[in-house]
Amino acid sequence: MKISNLQNVFKKNSWLAIFFFASMSVILFAGCAPQFLAVIGTPTKSEQQDTAEYDLSKNKTQKILVFVDQPTYLSDYPNLRFYLSDVINRILRDKAKVKPELLINYQALADLRMKTPDFSILTPPQIGQKLGADLVLAVTIIDCKVSELSGGVYYSGSLDAHAALYSVSSSEKLWPAAEQSRLVQVGFESERRGRDAAVIRLAAAAAHCVTRYLYNCPKINFKISDERTASGW
Image (cartoon, rainbow, N blue to C red; front, side):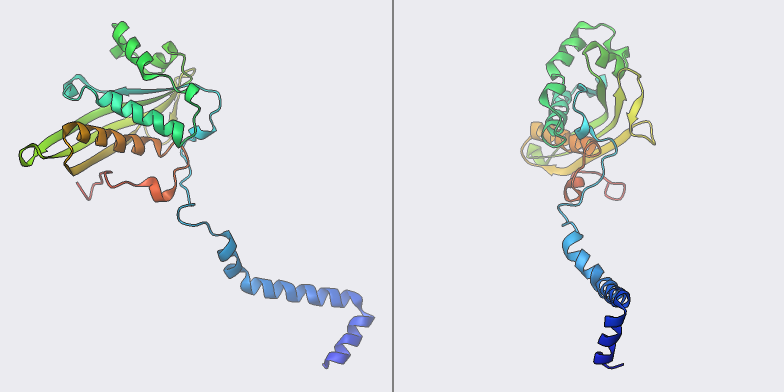
């Protein structure tokens, strides 16, 4: 059909003209939509995030106790409990955006530990209740090794721990959902800044591997080099 004839048809049937041009718009947009959306709708790699398994960044009122425990056979690392607690609290404050006033001070926990004869038999929710917490992030260190290499210049290290989040009021485990606790394993083959630096490095790596599930950690930061895997260790 000639263009002039087509124009005459549209003049006589305005509804047909509307339908025709609307259809053409859909067809044209459909053809370019994937490319168009790829340009404006796809987040960059740094913007992509892993969804938190339990999002503490949404917590606005509940007080949180970070309770790190270690067995007596790991007494060679007396500051490990403090280092791990300190880094976890800082990550919850700085990255999960938990208000500082909602994080119970480590010293309060240390004082309770010293003043309570039966502290070792208390459950995490019971400890949290004594300190006025609503939630307890319990991290139990089950193994830690720092070994001297090359005449004391270099050190290797490894740390294993279990982590879980509890409600104080109900004693219910809130995280992880599908298992009793989350196993965290970190380690490295060489640290040259000394034994204390090796312990601090282990604590920092373990803290990250615990807290990354409790806020929307960017994918680009989710995995770290000191995280141990079955294939690498």
